[in-house]
Length: 81
Image (tube, rainbow, N blue to C red):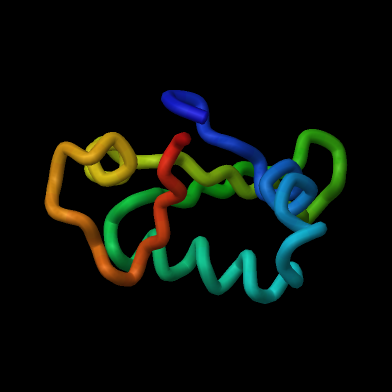
């Protein structure tokens, strides 16, 4: 979801059938630590003291996915048939 990013609840909704929510959060944290994505939090539009979290792939992450850099052994990228 570049350049806008994706809301955390949408990301979890896409992958919850394959992984537990905690595993999804750990995977995204790993991607952030490696510089492949970023996280932003904005105040919830109508719920006080709550935030909406967005994740966005970085140019480095795009290069990794598109094969424009050396593969990262810690990241599994499915190959298209």
